[in-house]
Length: 423
Image (cartoon, rainbow, N blue to C red; front, side, top):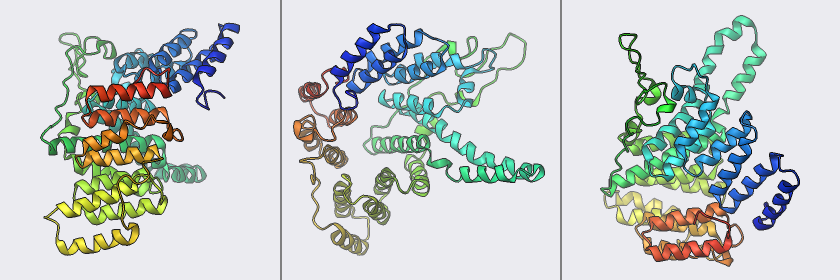
């Protein structure tokens, strides 16, 4: 109850009493870890969950939770080694076996960890692993066509077809697809600013425990003269180089278009489509994304910023036909009138974050920083969460704010979440 309403100190006091009354019970430690996570002490949450797991190392649920908590503090190698507890000892290739288990939660969390660490190549690799799981689900339905007719299992077959029709609505797929598209957009932006991302090379003998024997980059070194060295698909591109060197905007467009077809009711889908089409200078599709978002939520905090960015693009893009700009401007004026990028930022932290992102996209880092440093203030108490403050911290660093400004933001955020160690 107290954790739900944000009184983490009171919640910790009560759960400590429960632990003292029954120190061998595992559940109170799990609750304590969750409270610490909500309070912003990710390292403490990880250590507490580890202690709970050590009480019953055979409990797969506890191990799964501990892996998640490790990935949230970016311990990707340690998490992988722990995940190997789920893999058979005689598996021919342990990394490939992890992928074959199709644990999309693990792929997404690992991708998020690499993305926070700045390793976009490996992040994309893991997001695409999660996406491929759902593509496999979709393709596998064809295996049942003749079987169902031959075995007369038509009722079950119809159930499978109905499930397949909604397979891409799974949150794990949409999370992976959006995150991958955002990574591609970041790569495209870096190329446009002559700051091309270079894939981070894997170290020699990297994580030998996760590949049988002394295998490197997926190659199993068999005994001399026995068999051949085999390279498994999962490690043919350990750094995600093929994703980094691909046509980033084209790949982002594929993901955005697919999300528009399977997740059209999700506002984030149209925000992503806007970002992709704007970079590709497809302004009528940009307007379509804006209108689609407005139809879902006319008060969405990103709408003012999207309208302003489209208007600015029309003003600055001389390669776009002037005759085509007229109907676009007319539609914007009719649907939105005069819009300011700071609309709603006086009372909504979501509007602040949306405005800051747009300011950064337009090159106004100082204005974005001026907005972001205010997010811990009391006027944003409603709707202000730990994750939103962490997003503000990330954007503040991206804005180029000096160390003193970022330190002041961290100190201010600590007054909101005094137990947090992430600021």
